[in-house]
Image (cartoon, rainbow, N blue to C red; front, side, top):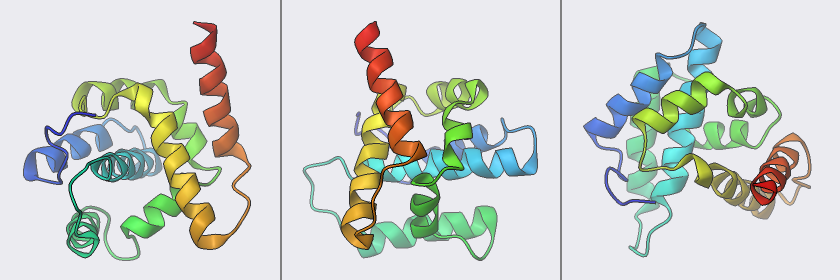
Length: 148
């Protein structure tokens, strides 16, 4: 993943909001926002630089609050990304087209890896079994890639 726009600067915020506006309903737009932002957050972690997580999370949480309002955080978005509800957005042609066009520094091919990273972290923190719809989706993507 390119380091270009890897931090949550104004340009990246606008790109995420542009993807958000591609949703046709309020719920779909919210899901597009969550997945776009979560993927950008996870891509930001893919660096050799030392990260200040307190500062990083504060920046993301501030943007989330301004965009969605209270009751949402980067933690809640990452939790949502490890659950069943994210699969419909992952399979959305409209989401994939918009994300690929507006957030090209996070390649669509990296999404299964980033989701696997998120599931691994969720497992480490909660100790829960991460098998389920997201893990199944990741496996389907692997099979599709190998079939090409």
